[in-house]
Length: 332
Picture: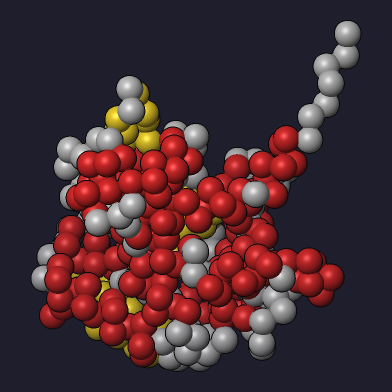
């Protein structure tokens, strides 16, 4: 007998924004930290946070359906990933990313997605998120640094080396990639490029990390400012996906010229497989570029390798991280 089809997968996908809202609310109300501190029932959590017991019960039950909380005999506990990444006492906490991922700019872009599909790019003014001095990137720099901590450490462990090292960090944002290298190698000198307001956030982070004396800045557009020359390493994290291949190739030729012979460019990207529908997170990233940029995309490793070779680089090697991000090292 044929299995009857159900519309519930469609229903749940169309209301999935409510699950996003529930997780965001739990982060805003610091529910995961309260549970980590020992408040287990809805009444205990409500009392600890000054909330309504009914509201807490419904919110926690909803979050439990996604597996971030576990409910047993009326008590809630955090799933392992929630305890690690959403309890504010954890050194790996990345709760601040909700401020960026659920920002009005991102949500409104999603609501206008049909218009973006019709147009083939963002319906925001100008170039969308990559408009000059867009304050969106200050929010990004303040909110997203914790999520970049693990890939930044991975890159630093592999690329920081020992001895004098001249590093250019392009579209530095929060600055954590260059800062991680400076912390790993006490002789590394970092030069960060980004909009002036964004670089203020990066400098704050460099001061906190104790590397501010070796952290230099060049404010302005990465396409327009002079980089200088003889860099050992150029960092290009989460940047190329905002632009089309011809624009990226022109930019990468500029990067190539800034490197000393034998220097390397390190890129961090969400790279889908050649089928462009796997793995999950990289495959879904392209739609973010459709709604927020005029010409951006999620590029495969094959795409990026071609761009680097066309810009004069000899070879590129790829490492896929547990986060499904790809670290690509390209050699001059």
